[in-house]
Image: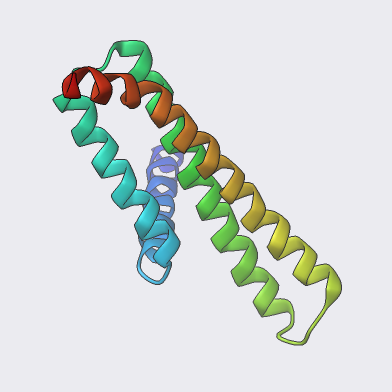
Length: 122
């Protein structure tokens, strides 16, 4: 019974981590807003199950990346606020990873939704 409580407590801590990250992080709010728009568009355009899977994978990749980036930046700032080349490198690389994931997700969104939008306009 103790292990089960500990297991579920871990979910509570994880959810708290997500909510703690969303409050101060503007980029995370932007990603979540875009995710909401894509979900709405998915229902409006009746995208296929495979298209939903692609969208869900993109959501997971971008939001997870942003959460990791947030954690890395917070930890790096805790280590030192002074200019440090290694800290700068780590922060820039983690931000770059999120940027790359977001660009790839946007391309995936264009592949899924652009033909549907073009068909609607024709």
